Amino acid sequence: MTKPDYSASLVNLISSVIGYCGGKPYHTGLQAFETFAQKAGKKAILPETSEQSGVEQENNVPASANSKKWKNVVLMLFDGMGIDTMTRFLEPESFLRSNLVAEISSVFPPTTTAATTSLESGLTPAEHGWLGWTLYVPQLDTNVALFPNVLQDTKTQAADYRVATRFMPYKSVYDIISEGGEYRAYSVSLYGSVKVRNKKQYYKELIRLCGEAGNKYIYGYQEYPDNMMHVMGTYSRTVEATIKGINRSVRNLCRTLAANEKTRDTLVIVTADHGHIPIKNVILEDIPEIHDMLLRPATIEPRACNLFVKPECREQFPAVFNALFKDDFRLYSRDEILQEGLFGNLGSDRLHPTFLESSLGDFVAVAIGDKALVNSHKSHRFRSHHAGATEKEMRVPFIAIDVNAMPR
Image 1 (cartoon, helix red, strand yellow):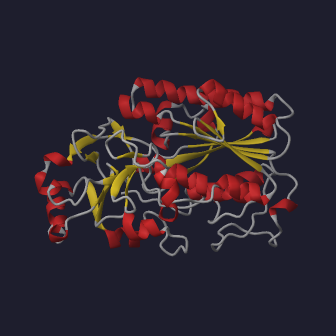
Image 2 (image 1 turned 180 degrees about the vertical axis):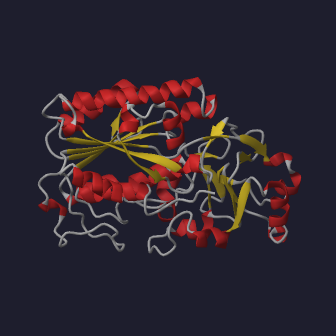
């Protein structure tokens, strides 16, 4: 079982970025980021966080005192491109692998909803509450797919407002950075502040923003290779071609930035929200000894399965579940998984009330093998998935390119 490391994770990476760009992060930074910036001669003096910092401070001088920072900090996230598939399909001398600074941890669960929300909030999943694709929403007394805002396993809108945003709001990284006054902040994606519809527009907008005057943080999200992995399989030829294409595209982007005086003072970071693993789907509806004990359909993710159990069944549920799945899942009670800190440190004073009081069920089944638990025959069944506690799902790259240092 591979647990998240909240001292070297996506949360720490974005905390470093926030601090570097003049904002005040909630968590300590990523040491690998600080070391890279120092070697590049671009080390920032980070502001204090609300935690005891693990990064050496320099007389608490504010970040604005550092005049050598990159003009542009670009963080590119490729959904699903974990360490496992990247190293499988790219040679060590490839552009991305040759610029790999460190392997870091995703969050738990290692899934897009939880991880990208951490990158856009600077918070752990326990703090922002966006735990996975679906969540039980007590205010509506129903399960909701958070990103599409529909009722679970349907196309029916959950409400005439964004349910997750209303009940689990957070302050965005873009606001945190912009309020610092040193950098403007943008997001480039189909859903971002700068909207793009395809790969060509995506790279064009990154280049355009980097060429504008002033310091900028730019977050760019792309849905591949995850969207192809789910359907085609973790190690399909389509996925291989996609990852090789990403390598070429990022290399060409950096070369283009390096060739122009207005854009070359740029740090490009490449990472992923999670990795992937080939899986076998198990339909809970077909297992009456489990299904009949459930109070409502399972939520969060098929490999991080949140289970509300009928009160009269709670005592015997662990024995019944483990008799069937002890080699495939680690079953935690609600109290056990909270104490384990998988979703984030319980010592935080920012724990989201929805997370603490109502979103988590009586048990959480965390995948340690290759199984995924889906509710019914109506549920999506993928060939490849994520959100479990395996190394392939949890380990993601921290790739960094100082464009200034590239040949022109």
